[in-house]
Length: 126
Image (cartoon, rainbow, N blue to C red; front, side, top):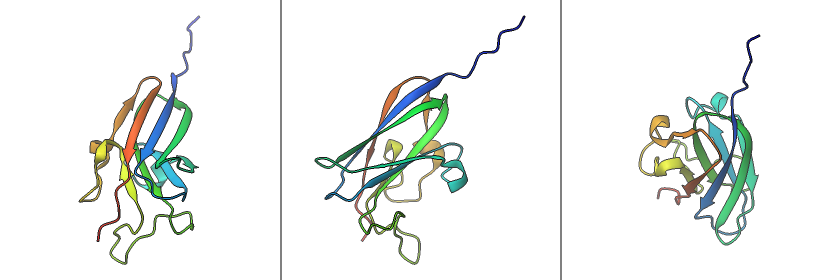
C-alpha cells in the first residue's frame, strides 16, 4: 500500500520595522507574483515601538514574498498617488521596491520550515 504524505507546513513570522505611530500594519504573503490573486495570506497588527509582528501558521512549503504597508489613513488599502506611487509607508521582503516597482523573484524567499522574515517600511516617495 502506498503512503500519501501531506506537504509539510511551516509557521512564518513576519517582523515589520519602521512603523510610525500606532496605525495598523498590513502584511500579505504572496506566491508567484504580487498580483492580488496570488496574495492570499494577509494579516494586520498594531506596531509596538515601531515594530509589528504577525505569525502565518501552517503555510505549505514553497516560495513566497511579503508585501507590507502602514495604513495611516485608516481605509484598509495602500493609498497611492494618481501615477501609482505609495502615499503611505510600505516595504517588501529582501528590501526590494524602494526606488522601483518590486520584482517578485527579488523579494522571494523559500519556506521549508519555521522561519522569520524581516520587512523594513520605507516612507512614501516625495
